[in-house]
Structures are given as C-alpha cells and as structure tokens.
Image (cartoon, rainbow, N blue to C red; front, top):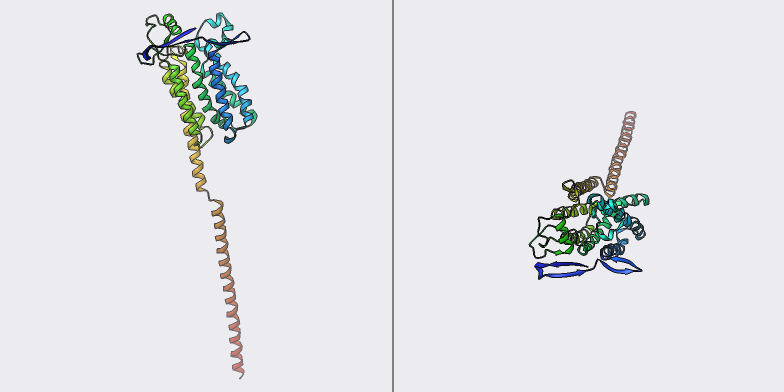
Length: 333
C-alpha cells in the first residue's frame, strides 16, 4: 500500500495498492491497467475515423498487433540499458517485471515508428500517412499512461514549494537513499502530471492540424517537435532521469527530435510550395486548347488570304487577255 499526499492542497492524501486485483492468482497492477487503458482508447478512437482518412482498419489492427509488443520491449530495454541499475545484472528476471515500473517512452516511440516503417514497406502503403494518422492517438495514450507513474510514485521532479507539490513513502525513500543532503519530507514536482497535461495538448493540436496538413509527414514531424520541446523542459526538472554520463539521455534525444522535426517540416513545406508554383506556371489544358484554336484560326485566315490573292491574280490575267483581244479587233477593223 502506497501513501501519496499533497501537503499544499489541504494535505490531500491517497492510499493506493499497486495491485488492482488478482485474476486466477495472478496480480494485475494499476500501472499496467492504466497504460493498457490509454493504449486501447487510442486504438478505438483511431478505428472510428480511419476510413475517413483513407486508412484501412484491417491494416491498423495488423500494425497494432506488431507494434504494441515491440514498443513495450523497446521501452523496457531502453530503460534497463540507461538506468545503470545493477539490480538487472544481479537478477535478470527483473527485466521482465515491467509492473514494477520502468518503461522509457522514448524507447517505445522508437520501437513504434520503426515498426510502422517496416510494416508499411511490406504492405506497400504510405508510412508517413499512417504516422500522421496514428501519432495524435499515441500522444493521447502517453497522456493517460502517465497515470501509472502516479500510482508507482516515479517520474517525479525536484523539490518545490508550489501548492501541487506531492510526496509519498516511495518518494521519501528514494530521496533518502539517493539524495541524503535533501529533506525527504519536502514535496517534489509531479513531473509525470506535467507531461500528461502537455501530451493532452499535443493530442488536441495534432487532431486539429491533421485536417489542415499540406503534405504527408507534417503531423509526424510536428509530433517530434512538440513532444521534444515539452519533454526537454520537463526532463530538466526530474530527479530520476536516465543518464548518459552526466547528461540526461532524454534531453539529448529531445533536441535531436526537435532539429529533425523542424528541418523535415520546413523541407516538406518548401517542396509543396515549389510544386504549386510549378503547376501555376505550366499552361492548363483549357489554355492549351484555346491556344490551339487560336492557331487554327490564324492558319485559316492566312490560307484565305492566299486564296484571295490567287483569285485576284487570275482575274487580272483574264482581264489582260480580254484587253489584248479587243485591241487586235480594233486594229483589224
């Protein structure tokens, strides 16, 4: 049983058991249930509008069946690799116990995007269009899934005196072990909540923008930009970041996502604008037909002038012959 409290909000407290219930003797944890709920809701919402956006619902189901397990595996491996926790070396079976917490979302994103590109190449469908369709719902699943961090008391930030600062038995134990110079009773930033709210905003914006995109891939690259910006800021507040040396690995990846997203988005817009200008400069089929008709009229006029000139010449010749005959007759007379 975990105790979570918000001292600045009238000392609101929650007593939450990590295990929601047991099914045939197997414990089902809130962490997994919340993540699965977010994922399922995202899939159902996507299925409702897939046909309107030119996506085959059967392709979505097939992609989800591949991408879901691969994303979870990648998210777990990413966390295990960069956590630096010797526990995974001492007890390798702990790697598969994901209900204890420890899924790195960037690992899941990498797994999901990579699987999508491979799947679409095999199925011969446009990967960028599929990503434009699916990533808004992925952001929604992220927003809901962060609730699992609340139950496990993880993904929190540094200490704060803001009213919504939170504390709990797991947080205090973590601070006591890893930051002995800090008072473990002082509340910390609920950074998982910050990211959840940010992702809800990303979801809403991408759904709005998806109807206004000009090229396939724009929604995908906007997701990289928006999520990267939010994660880079929020990651700077956290105390339990995954590290690469002395640098937060998620901030490095966030910066890469932002740079890649901006460059690709600008490139797509430039290509689209160039194509529009080129199409505007090319004569339309209607103008081509008018030009042909105009040329035909000119040819007809020129031909008519030539015929008139020939007829005039002929008439002149006949008149000359008549004049000569008259002159001869006059002479004979």
